[in-house]
Image (cartoon, rainbow, N blue to C red; front, top):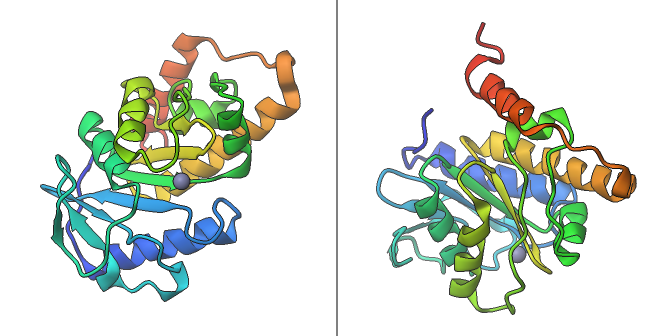
Length: 219
Ligand SMILES: [Zn+2]
């Protein structure tokens, strides 16, 4: 699995394209979403509070993963830089993180409810139950980063941020966007099915995830 990218204009443009899709798909409103991509020794992250439609490739900011110091770029990095850096450090298997305020996932996050795995596409692309952090007041970026690492675990490709939104990982920008949509659909199912929901047995979730990673479309 390729889990770091070269810093190219095409990559930077793709980040902008995914940001625009997040808005178009209703997964975030205005600039309340941000994206990071793992580079060889750092990450590339979207700038803080900048209209996606006005973003240019040169507006992306390269930031160190350990302490969040800016390495290159003229803009201020996203206010959620600590969250992205901590999660990319904690989970070396994740290459891309998409943070959004997807409505159904946010509804569960506001109820502090976890999502068990109960639908096949979620088993494949998310890979495990998705936990929710404890509540962290807005603006405490380091505390939020620590809270997310505390509950994401080693296999789930997503974590809910209490009273806030969701962070979803992937091995590419497109996969992280697709995973965000799959998680959003799962959240909608959970809300609609309520207590009737029947989780998929854990060994089957593991098998589905393995099939997606190593066999799906490859045999
Ligand atoms: Zn947010």
